[in-house]
Length: 311
Image (tube, rainbow, N blue to C red; front, side, top):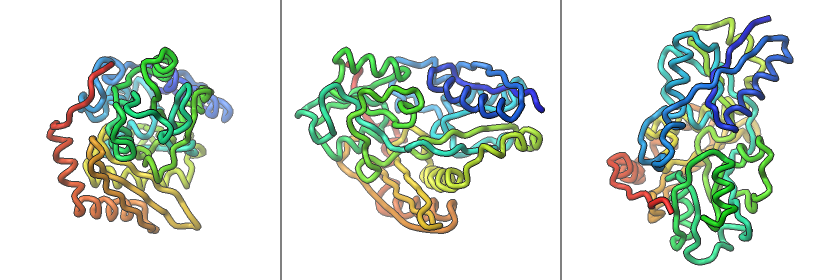
């Protein structure tokens, strides 16, 4: 059996994910250690993510460790992994997916619809902000950074009326007490890859790939490949107002996707079925661009977007 080193961010959720994969590998008889690596995204905590503008902000330093053979594999939240990997890396496994939806957390309000007029909602995601504003233009959206505990503490201290987080992370950490609404993808389209873990290795490392192949989930691989193809077609990273939700239905792939202006004034939605995940993602991406998605994204990439101030 092999001795394997996992590279991971040091956040509570990242370490849960790394330990989860480590435990599964140990069950196969491997020796596993976890190396904690601080990333750019972990160092910049006082700026909204949409303003940082660095693709791979949660993965760059981990990939450097992988390239230098300081670690053998990296465990990522797949939504943090850029759609265009460097040729020296590959995704060896995509794990069985948790619920990819977003959730509304609040101490007293049961749903987005129930939030009072001008309620303060915390999120640093332009994707979530855009869809919230499309549903409820009156809401005040404020940046929310930090790990899951920090975000939930800010909510408990009354800094926000509600915050939006990923269902998967809260479920993995067992911190679902304040979840009031699981927001359906038809109301808030999730981030591409949300809920899945991507396990990255050096390209051509066949021995490590072989050790990891039992972790690869065919449905998760199909759905996230489709979502990531769409995101790649639109030129987006994880902090742009693009949502993608694919699932395998009766042997075919169904993809729903959105591109939205961050102020919610314009939201384009497209859905199609197909058999080839990359082809389907590209087709839906092209359709969104043709319908005006290109104009919306040019404005976002041109940094003409005002992100609300930290409360």
